[in-house]
Length: 204
Image 1 (cartoon, helix red, strand yellow):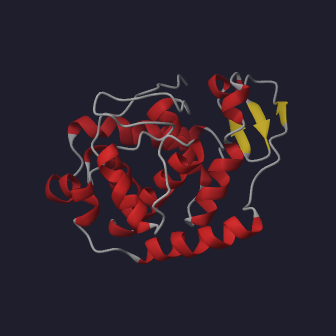
Image 2 (cartoon, helix red, strand yellow):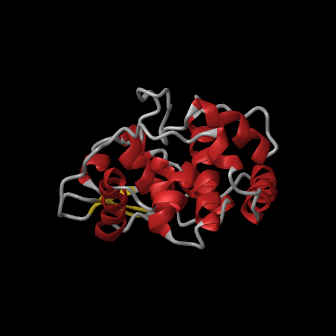
């Protein structure tokens, strides 16, 4: 399977966040992150070993060869694991979404100004800070970028009744658009691409 890297140009806007009332997930993320900060969070060891088929086995599973060839990016695995755990998400979902978004590159900026590993839109930053009750969150920080993505995915899943396809479409095209129009044709490659990553690789 060829891993396609796509830098999303979708808008994750403040209006999109405010289109639904704050969900219990916001409280879950906010409360659990405080505990995580106190305890140091959870993580994986980061030890890697070849599986003999081009993939690499890590403590959290098996990752694609394109990622295995990037040791600096592999070091992000514990960060994904920590914030996914805080927001009660499978780490695989956050990892695959952000791999599709940027290839786990913090210096990527989209044409709409979305930044970082998980392509967080500037217009969403203040809302995410309010949701998590943390004005210091900075999307230019790799850890903060991943944390905000995990919180946003958690919120989308809650808004969409746990339907992963709708949540992923909402991440790309915006949740209001998904509610009004369903998954648009332009969003389907995004949803199916990330779903294929989840299916073909045991990320976590």
